[in-house]
Image (tube, rainbow, N blue to C red):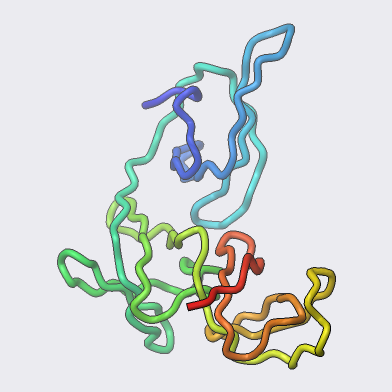
Length: 187
């Protein structure tokens, strides 16, 4: 058990026998009345995101989630297979659980798998990853401003918008939470 004062991003709690992960939280102390905590929480199984407000100091039940360092090995056609970095045990995970993380995963990439009662809940990626552009239309001479963007396909097959000056073969840093281009990476 914990209180709403202990909330932090990524915390998984049990509400009405369902697991919810805290995405955002904000402690609010209005001029009148008691303090409260405004949260945005995500249902771990369905992916549904809701806003919920709790009174400050309210007791909440937290779920003990085991986060394990894993390496993405390969996709066997139906499942994504991850290897535990300590035990070398292989764990297949369905595409429904992997979700949008699949857009940013390359073989041999380090990820974190969250387990609850030996069941995989979700895949946690770093905040950003570096991927190569596998295809984009060539930029025109003089297109060096931040004003325009064009579509580009990454090596994982995911499509994003990039600045006009980028070309096929360039490496870019991509935000894994939003799927947005961050910057070009030079080796």
